Length: 583
Image 1 (cartoon, one colour):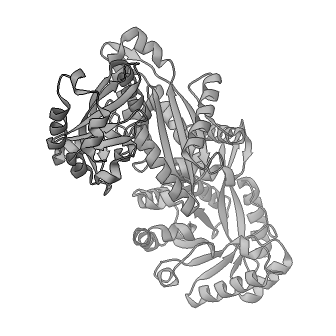
Image 2 (tube, rainbow, N blue to C red; image 1 turned 45 degrees about the vertical axis):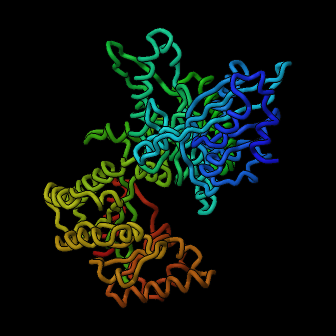
């Protein structure tokens, strides 16, 4: 049956229409606008040539298909629900819609749909008319933008969020990375809308959107998915605690007051967090679990964040509590009182057995957490940027205690100070070191600065420049934890270092593991060939000492000689060794 005959057979008899069937068929076939007719089951029974040209489908390909063959997939389920409701109640709907051509290209159209009914009221046909919209680049770009963005906040909408989340999950799966999804709901937002009006509520949402963007990286996703609900996606996180830290920042920023018109408003957030892959592997599961966690945050008193997994809540809570204590402890540092102290571990010359140096090691004793291992609090300080003021304090305190040692008659003992990556990048490091040495009337050879292998390799050009300037001052430089990173030996020889510190992980099993023994042997030989001194960390047994001594290791450090000691004990230890040497 031809398209024209199909239309003719589907329409009511001409004597019951305002226009005759022949006139309608002529208009149908000759129209420049795309037209189609569906039957009661919403299958296409007729389409004109204009629609075929616009869509790229032949008439044979269209007949018998559902009109969704033309759908671009951009419209939401709510859009179609509203359209069908209008057709059911008014027999007519009109609106803008994006269609998809056979070749995959999307294009905007003005769509008008009319319903033709049988005598009993059942649907006989739908007649659809597609009118072209000005498809200039500007209009098309604007329509494309609106399809994927919330017009109020200009944030990505739910459709864009779901698409970008799916893409991020695929990337995380390929690269074995973690991802965090946060669902953020504003507490008591409905009260603001109801009492002050939607115009005030809209301005509040716009302000919230701006603050959310300020809390995250440019590569993170912030979207508004409806009402007062926002989502934040953090791809490629180091650990779940990273998500906790960002959530804490969001809480703090959003909880500050908002001034809108003559009103001072508050909109605290309740945040639910789910993690890939432990809480789900697809967008739907992660969003549902974040929603569950968000309601847990609501029930826990609002203005807080909760992980979907209880274990993560416990770990994040402890971590954030420790971060708060660390901030307060650093802020309260004074000459008279501090929760921080330095312990010192001797470095022994292998051949003579003399103590020629000590390493300064930071310790933290907190009222809430007690004595906290450096393995726990140093990483928090590095993640939060607190390592900068803390590391600066270590330099000043070390220099002060060296002056006290000299007053006790202890001289010729070099003290090693660990320098973090953030300190090494900071422009004030050189001024800080010069100032501390001058303040306590010390010589550059009184201290040694240690940087880890990974820190030295992080930004080679900048590192080389700063180390060159420190070496020019006469300060001994050392590479700590050597062998745990991925150093370029060609680069290593250009660094102005005097010492390599062999990591304790290689020393631990040096007697039983042939690989560790080979690494130690090669490293010591490499260091000596470059004119460097070798210091072995973690020496705990006489057998380890003898093995390293046989390899020609210059200095030894570890529990075999002494554990790290408080300053007063260090002074007593050094005095005793100096007295023995003099005898």
